[in-house]
Length: 259
Image 1 (cartoon, rainbow, N blue to C red):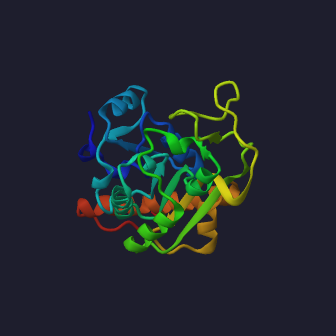
Image 2: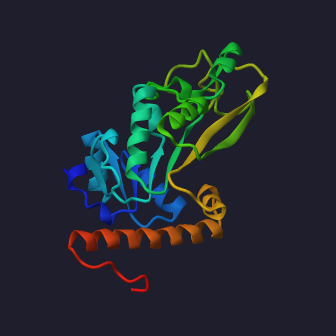
């Protein structure tokens, strides 16, 4: 089974942490027009399944990524909430920030407003999953980013949850490891209009270098031609940087910009 030490990083544009069986790798390619990514997971069974499906995945600890390995970005999709605690979350983000050159992308279900909904006898269903061992909130990320010296980032709040009729909201009496509300399976829930904003998910973008406003807007945009154009420009730059490293390793002169 391939591990982190077996990877030729010049072959890849991004790393996907907690890649499991490979679905989030496809998401990273699609959202950021990335040509090729490699998944990293600590579970050998999941890596074996991914590899059997033709997914490029390796066994490894997300805290042990090689620094300055030349990838453009690192994605963490529905991953960080499965770690044991916030210190481990911080260690993984620090590892990702040392590995990538351009940006980090974090996406996971929202844990904002847990205490508020509890007072109403309600919760969003993923708050009560065995696998979600830590519940990072936006304030936690802000503290971690500040500690790591990551001062340019954007948080996008996804799908507002305004009241208890939303399918993601369950009564606290519902069993653990549930999904969307089903009146045939779950106890009834009160009808409540929420007094604070709640959300389905957050997407977080962290800059690792200075960006022109148009470049940053293209990365954080949810789609569109501007994003695709900017990502293609980033791909060309990354290819030039990788070629420079290849030439340096072989003692060759630097390539002309027009080569």
